[in-house]
Length: 176
Image (cartoon, rainbow, N blue to C red; front, side, top):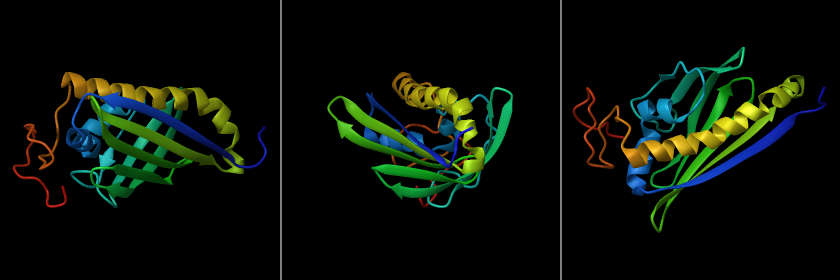
C-alpha cells in the first residue's frame, strides 16, 4: 500500500487543422464535451448552456467495475486562450487546464491534468493509472478527429463562429 498522498500530472498535446475560435467554441459546448471526453460512462449534468466561470459539471465515471461521482467547476476561462476546471467532489482532486494557440497549420491544444489522491485513497492510483493515461491520450485525439471531420453538432449558438448550431436556442447567451 502506498504511504502518503499521491500526485500525478498527465500532459497531452495535439495540433488540429482548425481556427482557434472554432476550437474554443468546441471546448465550451457541453454537448461536444460529452463526445470528446472518452470516459466509458458519463451522466453529465451541466449547470449552464455553455461552460463559463462557475459552471458545474456533475458526472459518474466508470472504470472497470468501479464507479465514481464527480463534481467539476469551471474555475478559469481566459477567452481565446485557456479553460480550467477543478473537482469539488470526487475520489481524486483534479485540476484540468486546456490551452489553445494558433500555430502554422491550425491550432495547438494542450491538456494538462494535475491530480492528487489523499493518503487514504493513494492506492487507487495504481489501479486507475492505465485508464487515466489512456483517457487523457484519447481525449485530444478524439477532439481533433471530430473537429477535422465535422463530426459534431453544437448545442448552443455562439458568436465565436458562424457554424449553424442545430439547437433549440435562437440567440447566443450574453456570456458567450
